[in-house]
Length: 372
Image (cartoon, rainbow, N blue to C red; front, side, top):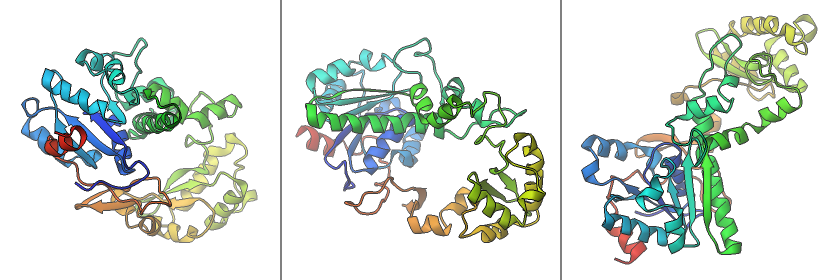
């Protein structure tokens, strides 16, 4: 396949097949031009349904695939040979599994001291929970992030899997890998990048920790600036059932919000007093309920009131600004997020080719990487 050019062109990444944030991090590197080869499980360990599902997972876009049974000596030797010629290796096993398979950091770095060995886990490589299973919601719960996403008196609501899996996981792994590559350019040495979601999530939440340190964020849910308690940072239902999002935090933006709503600050509850927030929310809710979502979108279009329609996934790509940016694109009939960020030295972002079927690229990979 023709690989995407980008700032990481020429970087070889060996991805040991896993699920979740590890593959997402590998996708990000592929989007930026890296040559990512995914070591999939062999056919004997896969079902036909698994093959079909893998071929349709656009999270796996941009890879080439070779099937390797890491428990078989010959395939393990091939994997180690690939690692010896890679710039980056990514694995998402439980702690100790890569070592038991014989493809841990010691073995790989002994053969390739320039290798950046990226490890993606939820709990980290050590600690009381290191060997436990978990998912985004569990890592988010233990780090305090899940509690902060609910309203007072209501249960916490998981914000999809974007906080622990992505912000605290795959993005941190990708950043760590690229940082290690930058350092390698100076030192000539690779290293291990230990990316754990329970480490990355608090780092991603640093603004909240900062507000808390200033005494401006309460551990009790409710009454906080960004948790939906503040009526000028919330969502409202409109006539017909649509919603708008309001983020009018700064005074000048709040003034434009009131102007668009036809309200006067001295005739409504004072938002500077948190005790009056419930009453102020009722005022806003009643006013937004008078018009449809799209009518309110037209009222606030071009203003700094920080009011936007809440769009469905189906609507998002056609929204004029999103369409202008090309942030959501179609590749092979599938809608998906375009590669990000963008670089002045490279063409506009476009998803890399479709995910391959497992082992589809064995001949090409072995020829290019190993000269076989």
